[in-house]
Length: 277
Ligand code: ATR
Image (tube, rainbow, N blue to C red; front, side):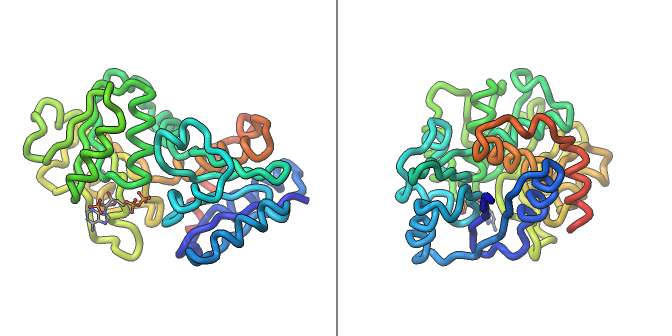
C-alpha cells in the first residue's frame, strides 16, 4: 500500500485527502492520503520518515513550500525557477521536489476557455510563492504582457527580476493603461479574501471592469468577494478549485510516474469537491 499526505499549517480544511480518496478509489489504487499539520521544527523528522519509505509522496502547502527545499536531494527545473516546491516524491530513499502549481494554473485557464495566452495581458496580484508559480506559467506560455501588483513592491520587483527576458512590469493600479486594464485577465495570487476574511478583495473596486476575466487562486470560499464583484457586473470569473485539482493530479502523475490524470474527468472531480465545501 502507498501512503501520501499534504503538509501545511493550518491544514484541517484541506480538500486534498477527499480528492485523492475519490481518485484512488476510482482507479482501484491501494493508497491513502491524509492531511498532516506539522510544525516547522518537525519538518526534518517528517522528511526522514519519507526517506525511510513510510510516506511515498507529499503535497506541500503554506507555509512550507520554500522551507522543505533544504531537506531534498534534488528539485526539478521548474521548482528551481519558481523557488518553491509543492510536491515531493520519495523513491529508493531519495527525495525529489517538484512544482505543479504552475501546471495547475495554466491548465485551469483552459477551463475558462482562455487558450490564447500569447494575445492576452495579465495582471497578477501578489508576489509570494503562489504568485511566482502563476507568473512562471504565464512566462512559459508567452503571455503578451504581465503586470505585477503587490502590497510590498520590493517583492514584486524581485519576482520580475527572476524573468529577465519576459515583458513584466511592476505597477500600481492607477498606472495600468486603460486599454489594457479593460480587457486584462486579473489573477488574484494572494490570500486576500480567503476564509475567514471573506469580505476582503485584492482588487480596488474602481479597477474591476466587465471586459476583464477574473481568476482566483482561492477556493474557500468558492465565491470570494473578488469573484462576486465580477458576477455583479456580468464579468467572467473562475475559482481556485480547478487549480487545486489540476496541481494535485499533476502531483499524482509524478508519484506514480504514469499519466493517470489523463483518464480523469476533471470537471466531475471539481464539482464533487465543490459540494464538499
Ligand atoms: P503563498 O505561498 O500562498 O503565495 P506568501 O508567499 O506568504 O504565500 O504570499 C502571500 C501573498 O499575499 C503576498 O503577495 C502578500 O503580500 P506581501 O508581499 O505584501 O506580504 C499577499 N498578501 C497577504 N495578505 C495581504 C493583505 N492583507 N493585503 C495585501 N496583500 C496581501
